Every structure is written in structure tokens, then in C-alpha cells.
Length: 105
Image 1 (cartoon, rainbow, N blue to C red):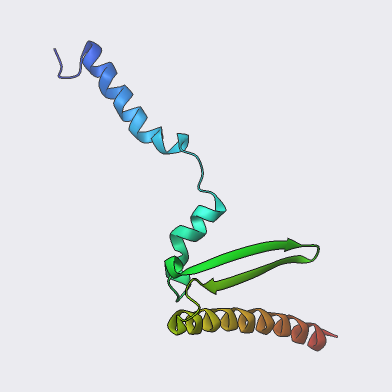
Image 2: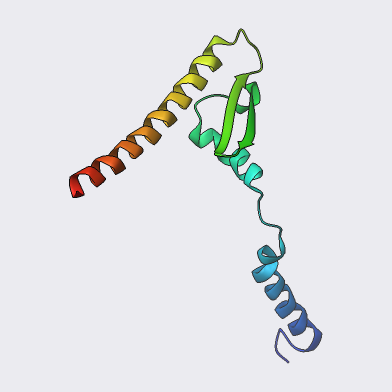
């Protein structure tokens, strides 16, 4: 008799299959959960000390980030730095695209 015969073998195979495929049955992470779970790697300010609001518009959307404590000058400075950096990256990409278009003509 082998160590995995009969019911013991079936149980071992079932456990192995469940372990292998258990991740496939879990619900996918929502976009909000993904942002919350990765924000500390991207944003320099403390997510627990700020409030984020997103509003959809006809042309895209508007994001606002506010310090929960209006006197929290450290968080306000970090929020401003992060948003200004994002604006510069976006406009820099836009200018690069338009510059490349102008050179191609």
C-alpha cells in the first residue's frame, strides 16, 4: 500500500487542486481598493489625513485632495507638491507629443 492510496490520495489531490486554484475564485480588486492599497507608494502625503473626491464631467473629471485638518501645513504642502508634479508630467507629455507632431510636419 502506498502512502497516498484510496481516500487519502483523493484528499491529497483535492487539497492540491484547491490550493492551486483558490486565487481564481476570489473577487478582483476594485479600482478604489487598488488605489487605497498602493497610494502610499505613489503619493507623498498621508492618506489617512486627507480626503479625495472625484467628480466626473463631460470632458473627463475633476479630482480634489484636501487635508482633513485645515491647519495641517505639512500635508497641504505635500498635496500641492504631488498635484503640481502630476500637472507638470501631464503637460510635459502633451508638449512632447505636440513637439513631435510639429517636427514631423
